[in-house]
Length: 60
Image (tube, rainbow, N blue to C red; front, side):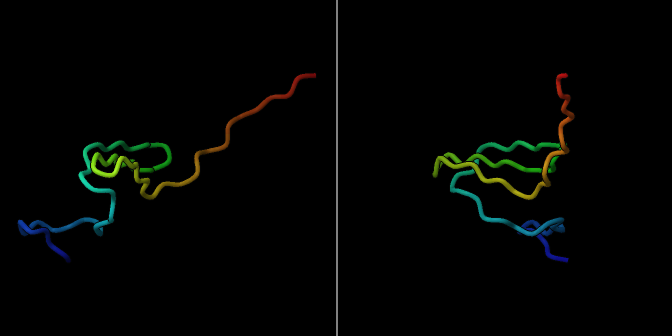
């Protein structure tokens, strides 16, 4: 099992995001992880699945 620089086991592979990542959000419904990066002014989306379909109703 791969280990971090401090010797702790890593649970998932490293992924590249923009420079100076400074924000993180997780959508628990879709499993998507959002990483905000100050240095590049970007947002990276990691993983996830499509959201469940929404119910709809028709008039008539």
